[in-house]
Length: 150
Image (cartoon, rainbow, N blue to C red; front, side):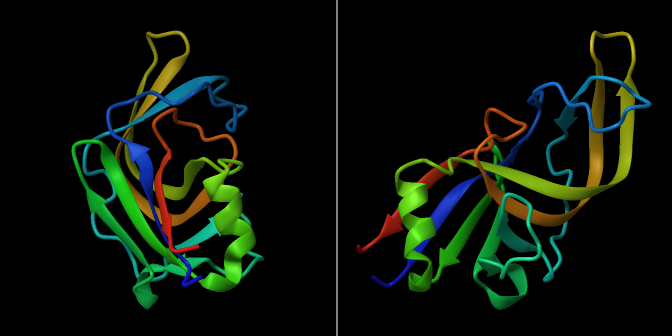
C-alpha cells in the first residue's frame, strides 16, 4: 500500500453547527462560518485525530501533505496519508472516522442574540489545526473520499 489520499470538507460555509456549549458564559449557541473566513492557511497547520496534538501529525501544510481550498461547499481539504497508517486508512474506509473538525482562533465574529439559541457568525478566523473525528460539529464536515491502492 502506498498510503492514501483523503479528501473532505473541513467547514461548510453558511451552515449552522450543532448546538455548542464550550463557552459557559454564553450558554448554548450555534456557529456559522462566512464564505472565505479562513483566508491564508499557515504552513504550521497539521492534521490530527480527535484534536490530539500529542500524536504525530498525519499531514501538514508546510510539508505539502495537507492542502486546503475554498469552494462553494466550504473549506475543503486534501491530505496524503502515509502507508504506515494502514490502521487509520482502514478506519476511514470503514467510516469509523467520518467527520472533520477544525481548531481555530477567532479574528472577527458577530453574535446574533435574537435567536434561540444565539448564533455566532465567524467572518475571519485563523486555522490552527484540522482533525479527523467521529462526531463533527457540522453535519457537512465530512470525509468525501479515501483513495488508496490497498
